[in-house]
Length: 501
Ligand code: NAD
Image (tube, protein in one colour):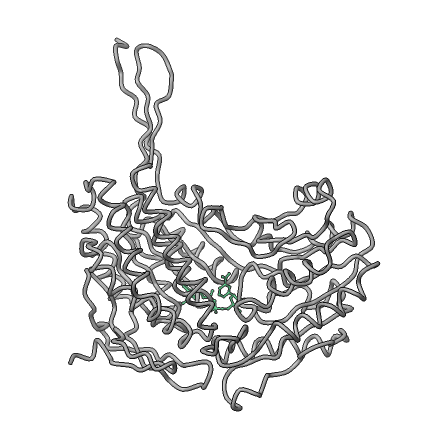
């Protein structure tokens, strides 16, 4: 057998063939340099396997394949219903392989298997189906002008799209990028995060099976500074879509300027969660827990700053602490009752611990967690769910994105103060608010500077609804009809029906 596939047995006993190559032109190939990267199981710190890592020369090959496919009439002129059919077939195949995909996701990323299966992979199927349905509904426009002119607008694909995704939702982030790009007729080169390369390579095996022509969807692994940067700077890439940290997003913007690429960015957040004293407290506590602790706290929209109105502050903390103790079951992600697995890598584990130290040294009040969680066989990147209260607005732990099971709570007096402090951040991704007063809920929602607001819930994302941020949380939207905007250009055509010079 070639070294492009390896037979693996996952910790849950599932045996499967793991591709290791770069997926270009519907084939797995080695990187030109032979360079590989290693991926580690965050639950036991052991290497799972290595995969080929793309360098700039491999990016050139992948981009050339995507360009060729983009120009090829097989794809360019494909009937839009047929394009949708390919996507529906792809979604069905993902559904058929969902247990293997969820297994790989859990093994490589550390997220609980039940969540990987029922949220991540189920969400991927949903997303691909949703955009498959759009393939034959991309409409242009006729604009009324005068009798001697026909003016119409056609929506055309942007071209070759470079897509760079993070490690927190490897398959879901791939789907959010593949879905809108493909239904609108683009071709893509997608680079997975070096921390979680495996599930997307398995997904690649389903692309040819679904019937996509070679070069339409190319998938590469590789490091950000080599493969990612080569893609962002490539002169033959028309668009770059990125999800990841704000710092990297800014670098991508600079690199994309080289040929003025169309860009969309989904970056970081420090999303507020305002709990008013007239809320349903039991529900506020449960949603606030999900809002920060879901996915090991590794969610860009995590509502990581809880602001509680002073009259219910003590009660909220008592109930929230109880909820975390009860619901945040930390442990082996393959166990059915596990809510929280390990952080994705040693680097992320160390990062969260460093914020715990920062909170302690700043004099914030640690009421839960505050250390590594060691009861999972002494191995793995597990963190005890951590709550700091009495946190001041100028503390590092209040201002910076931690990306872990780590929350800061402080109190406020008035609605005006809550809004002002919620907006006192360079970020603007999500915001939750809890109140039973409908007028107040909508009033506050309008005044919050963010791309998304949840009233009486948190982190409730939906393929059909636009997702994205304002301020330094991003540019553009993914999901919903809005997600199509970034993947089409509007071409205006003026037809002279009789104007003579
Ligand atoms: P990152 O932004 O560095 O990586 C995200 C993706 O960008 C990866 O595919 C990476 O390979 C690529 N990349 C990195 N540097 C690049 C470059 N110079 N040019 C092109 N591509 C590049 O994120 P990270 O280092 O994995 O995580 C660091 C922090 O980012 C986290 O602690 C968290 O705060 C944040 N983060 C946010 C999200 C999100 O969804 N908003 C996701 C992951 C991480």
